[in-house]
Image (cartoon, rainbow, N blue to C red; front, top):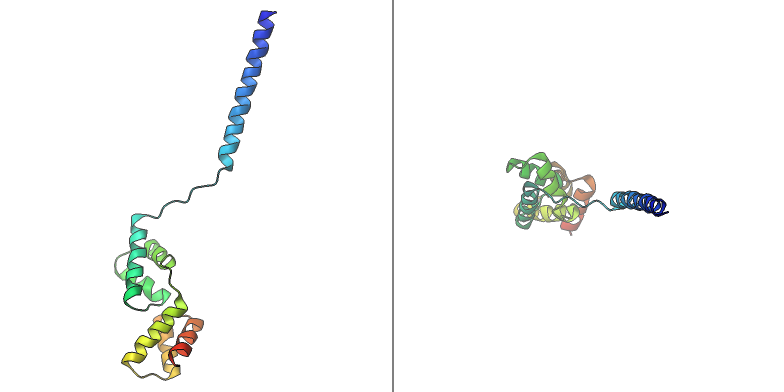
Length: 133
């Protein structure tokens, strides 16, 4: 009788261990993935992008090009531009004001210049409309 009880306990223990391991694996799969931290280069590109935006206005494309010129990789520059927190319409307005402080422009000329700088049509229209008040 003792041997039968030992076998039942052993089988039950194996089932509990197997079920517990399966449950633990299932739980691990359901855990949310952690967000991978940005690389040092990406963080530096983001910081540099913010520094540039404090000094002067840039279009998204213009800032990307400037970061690439500074030696950041494509991925780093893209990350810096994406995560710098810029409002590109406001940047178009600031750039339009910068131009109007130093030169005379017609509305169309200012719009064309902003488009040349890399601002989208909507951004350039916004910049001209706000700066030409």
